[in-house]
Image 1 (cartoon, rainbow over the protein chains, first blue to last red):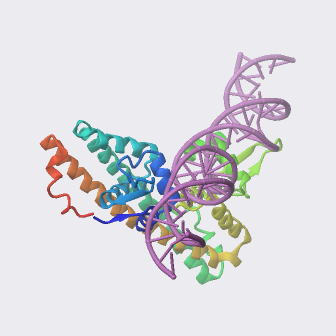
Image 2 (cartoon, chains in turn blue, red, yellow, brown):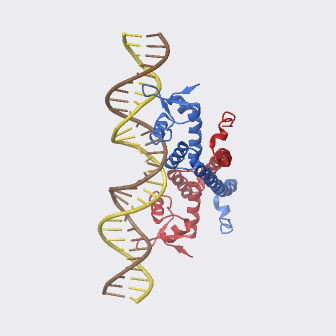
Image 3 (cartoon, rainbow over the protein chains, first blue to last red):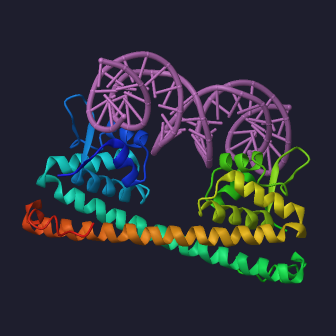
Length: 136
Length: 136
DNA sequence: CCCCAAGCTAGAGTTAACTCTAAGTCGAGC
DNA sequence: GCTCGACTTAGAGTTAACTCTAGCTTGGGG
């Protein structure tokens, strides 16, 4: 079965070897194996696990909480409920984040339109009269 | 015309007075006025401007870049193009961010389903056989 | 057999965006 | 006139997540 050095794994995951060692130090890779001389080697399953770590990171979850999840995984079936609840919560977090981004997008698009009109007129003054009428 | 103290403005914007003073120090509020004795007071237009700052922050823009935008605003019509381009770029950033969140959501939902099945079975082992068949 | 790129560790340094502390001032209410 | 809460400043402290440095070891190619 194919394995990866830390450099290769970093490339695949679009991270640095520094970051991977940091994750290891923080306990996010209890499964990781080493060669006799101490060199880390990453199995496909390790890469898959790190992709989940990356997914959780992209929901804004801090490393310490991700570690809690990893610990639950090591503990086995007795933590199934916690892990399930955690993903439900992450889902809610991502939904909230997306909703916030939709609001942000509205403001940005409004500003794009504002500056397109201003550019056409050559001056921002075109918006002076109806400033009070602007939504947000 | 109604004005706000730093504490009131913080409440309205859901920030702390510390954060507002920090923004001031970083040059995000060149328009801000003070009383004779040095106390900041925020006009409605200042609140509106800070909402734009907040919007830009929520696109992931660092404070220093937001300051550049604020400086452009102070410079007047000669920077209309830059400001327009900046909002176009922010739009692209938000779109990319949303697309990434959609991918994150797919993984999360997949995991939710995974743990629901495992909970029903009482063990994670139900997934052992078809692990290789799992997308991602 | 030698070399060098890439691995290892411990621990120091970086960065952003606050967040807080200390010491002082101001203004409204009793 | 005094007090108290909210304001002011300068500058120190915090936190997360890396990122780098120094000094050392190791494994594969010529």
